[in-house]
Amino acid sequence: MNPISVCINPGQSVLIGSGTGSDGGCLEVLEGMARVYCPCPETQGMTLAFLQAGDQLRTERLCSEGVCVEALTTLRFRSDATPVEGQGYDPVNEWTLQLLRIRHLGSAEQRLHAVLALLVERLGRRCGEWCDLPFRLTHERIAELIGTTRVTTTRLISKNRSSQLIEVRSGEPGLRVAPQLLEGALLAAG
Image 1 (cartoon, rainbow, N blue to C red):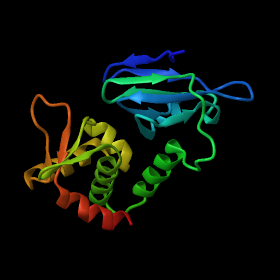
Image 2 (cartoon, rainbow, N blue to C red):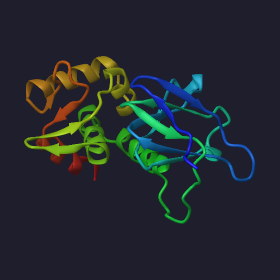
Image 3 (cartoon, one colour):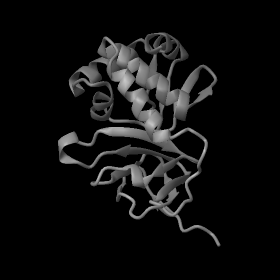
């Protein structure tokens, strides 16, 4: 029997309720990339994780409000997956830990470079002289990830664009990052 899958377009979000019962529930990403965030008004859409094909989200581990899953690229997932046990790796917990580590780096510029490095390492790919992310994040979302204001984030991104360390091509959904920016970030995050 084929699993029933749900498709959502980039920018759309769905609320995933907390699992019930002893076996809980599990969402599995089949295609695409997603941002997982908290829907609670108190946290203002705080990012918990990013997911890609093959990643699972255990719904019995969510807060009572559940979580929202936002499509960054065209996203296809199933919500009736069987959790993979015994691997010792939970992508949501790992992302949350890494994002927390980044928030504690000294400067906003270090945090920006570290979050870009993490996103490229986990979700991007090397393409010639650049590293490509297949999606863009708003300056507001990046500000949330690095714990700064949107104005500061815009200033930092503009500075990196002027230095040709970040490139945003008109009409393309992705973001290009120079490897030099990422190499320095790995030392800062380590």
